[in-house]
Amino acid sequence: VLYVQRWLKAPLQLPGGTLQQRDRGTPQGSAVSPVLANLFLHYAFDAWMARTFPTIPFERYVDDVVVHCVSERQARHVLAAIKERMREVGLTLHPEKTRIVYCQADNRRGQYEHVEFDFLGFGFRKRSARTKDGKLFVSFLPAISKPALNKISAEVRSWRLHHRTHLTEKDLARKINPIVRGWMQYYGAF
View 1: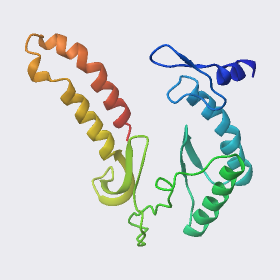
View 2 (view 1 turned 30 degrees about the horizontal axis):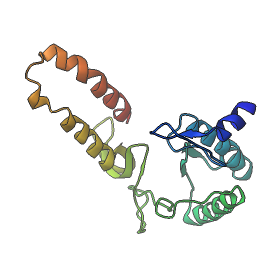
View 3 (view 1 turned 180 degrees about the vertical axis):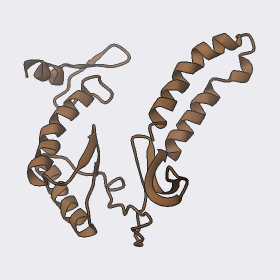
View 4 (view 1 turned 135 degrees about the vertical axis):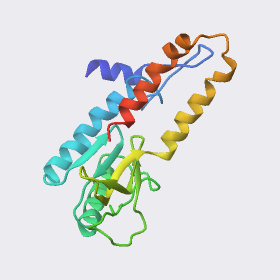
């Protein structure tokens, strides 16, 4: 606790080298910021969800959360409770990112405003797929999201491979393969 207090009270060094005193919060992008956010949300959200809604599964990554409800009524009740809980701990939900999403599939065909969402670089929506024996079905499935795909495309374009004619194929592979392998391992999980 002492180290956390010191970190929170330590002055912020600006690019010019001057020190700026801080009286609250952590600097955006600091190494300790996500650690403190996770620690705070573990108690303010995770433990609260486990006590308040023990049968409702959820995933949280830093401040992004997906809660799995079985009905629209349950989803509205849980969302109202989460909003109240966040108010109690001094936080608010992002109004543009907070919504109830209907997970369409062959066996769920209701009409709702929101039927897809992005989470951790994956787009979750209704998609066609095949069973092991080749039979086609529709389910609510993940795939790489459009923003993640655009980010990868921009990264590949930034490499300007057509200007790297001085490099051998081996040199290019040595630079590119670890990055592409990481993308494949992450986005190929589904």
